[in-house]
Amino acid sequence: MTTNTIAVTGAGIGGLAAAAALHRRGIDVHVYERGDSLREQGVGMHLGPNGTRLLHRLGLADELERVAVRPEALEVRAFHDGSLVTRQDMGAAWERAFGAPYLTVHRGDLHRMLAALLPAARVHTGRELVAYEESRKGVTLRFADGTATRASALVGADGVHSVVRRSHTGDERPVYSGNSALRGLVDAADVPGLDPAVMYMFAGPAARVLVYPVSGGRQFTYVVVAPAPEGIAESWTSTAGRADLDAALGGWAPQVRALVGAAREVRRWALYDRAPLRRWSTARTTLLGDAAHPMLPHHGQGANQAVEDGVALAVCLAEAGPGGDGIAAALGRYEAVRRPHTTRVQLGSRDGKAPGKGVREQAADVSWILAHDVERSLYEDPYEEVSADTAA
Ligand code: FAD
Image (cartoon, rainbow, N blue to C red):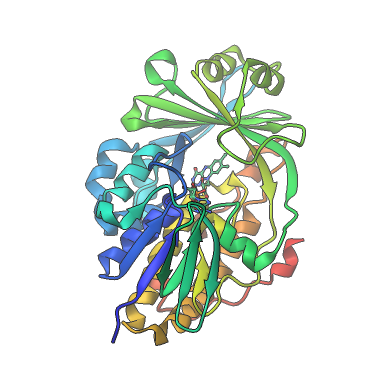
């Protein structure tokens, strides 16, 4: 029987996690990334226990221990004077409850360690997918540089503006949420009032600010979710200035304004909402990560769900065995397990999209997300299908 070759487009967190999981299971995988190098945009991210248990199994426990932070607590503080409203212990208590740690990490660190799990020859940069053709035997990928390649199956991990997704859905009309996210990175030495073992949430009437440690506690990253006019790009390449921060945080405690103002550069991402897809796969193609289920960031789960997708896909393709005959069934199994789960997460992540909501409302119960073990779920009863109709 011939060996299957899997082509993954996009070397983001999702594409690299999928490729690493496939490679670990002995599957011939190649990643095609449009960027000229493997450089991750963005600053920090939360890794829930649902993500970290999988990263540990990929062999990254020691590396994460070195560069990530396991926050001891989440402190909610008043926006106008910074006083403590409530404190929730996390740390060891959460690790015991969920069977894996809750971590905060610099995106670049996670991206680098996932890339290091793959032989360099498996990742092809400067290869922007522009089109593909699917036949009974496989897929031909065509790139912007005029080159082409063939694979047994194509995995679209090419992000929120995915070429592969577009061929499934046609032109979509994402709905602007009315908010944008401003993000910056600050040296811990520049904000001595903050404890590098704590996450902070400041919730005001029109905006909220989440601050958490990364880079082993040497830096803090923040996210300001605040109303903004439509027209900002849905991309981390947009930058914001002092005036944008002042507009978002007028009347806030000086310590919060000083903290966000201490970043050397502030990036801005417009927050758009999209309805869950009804289908991800054909006989030889499927979607993964933001390409499959772009979600608002309020649960901090987009990348975690992408890692879950990658691991699930690898198990399904590995158990299908060599030879192209099993691919359609493997992609079908992958979608049957993942789409209902990510649809629930995607719909749930809309909660709290209005920054003015109370802290209790914003802290929706996400324990079912954090407790999830995607590898176990592959062998449990299939999920009850969640209707994408509720998504309008
Ligand atoms: P991406 O990271 O977008 O990667 C896609 C890759 O594909 C890129 O490298 C791109 O260059 C490449 N590409 C695109 N088009 C092509 C093409 N045609 N050909 C070849 N390559 C292509 N998630 C969390 O889990 N925790 C958090 O704390 C968190 N915080 C967030 C905060 C904000 C404000 C936002 C907006 C998102 C946040 N997320 C968080 C979500 C998370 O960033 C995304 O869900 C995650 O990065 C998706 O990964 P991905 O690999 O699917 O897509």
